[in-house]
Length: 481
Image (cartoon, rainbow, N blue to C red; front, side, top):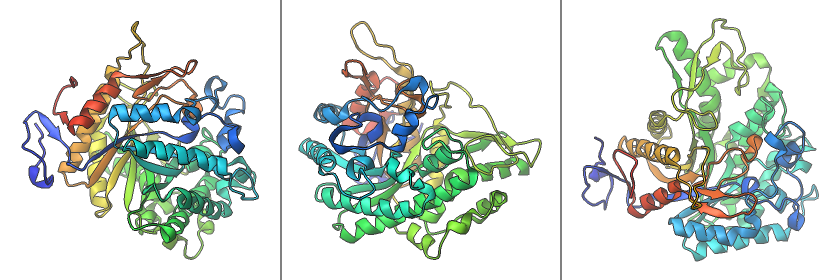
């Protein structure tokens, strides 16, 4: 049985052997994203994003769903903040919709867009909830995509200008900032695999978009830090996977290295000041000279220091050597050769993702070593299941409860191993628009009836509230009363 070492957690009380207690200053919260919950896609001057365009393209989003009305959060933010208070959240991570702030190529700032986030931040602070702002969660203004989007270097500079505006407006109240959410998805799912906006299938363009996204992160961090107060903290949110092979032979180790490189290290290493990993650059060299977009000084900008790393995690990636070492994998990784992506195992989420908390613990323990003392915040972790509404209107979601507890035990194990993990933000506060899957997947600890917009706290939300109240979880089992 695993228990916390009290010497690591200053101020912690004596521990029951059946309890896993978190550090006394551990931050508990939840996360959402603007396009997934706000709705009101044409309100108050907002213009289309690439996701509005993508969703309007037949066959791109399941059932033809789009971002209207989503959770109608644009009109119901006060109600949702009340829910956060009920759950005991200490922090709430939201994203700002770029098309609400800079709706046109002339660069003129829309005050009504800023006013919505003014209201949201003030509502949060009135309830004692710390706002955590993410500046980009995939909703690039369509007018920027029309100018080349993330394939165009100028977009990185436009992003820095936008970041400076939003930070300058909200920075008197918002202290925690993230630049980008999951640039891996924006670059590779959006430009290589074509299953996310803008829906391109161009491997080299995806690597160029990746560089410009990372450049945008560095430029925006510098721009905000120049005008920031001393207590402002800046971060980047990356989605990580743990690559696993069944065997430990040389060929298996090599495909694990390749997938780890194209999913994790190609984004993390340059942010940590290590540049692009040489082995990964070599792996994708056959695609062409994508590094021609890397200009002198870019890597220094990308390595602008951050104050914490946002870690999103959902599932591991299982791999094996391909029979043909030259075969190109039909998957989300540009330029991946000689590898076979295996099916997930065990009980899956409704999204078809493998539930494996051991992979999460292994990943976090490794990151704790690799980031060289940089604090970590779990900025997303959650699971989608088909929820059943009972006759009394309640939602008992035991699978999501089990996922939550198993993965929090993984976080606890990583803390014990020495990883400096400061908080956990559950994905997601609300059921929402789940990108290419439309409204078919429910991640929320709060159920949303999309026809009536009624909110119902699920059993998992009640369990999360109890965990937050106690700052601890049971070492085994799933009964949290």
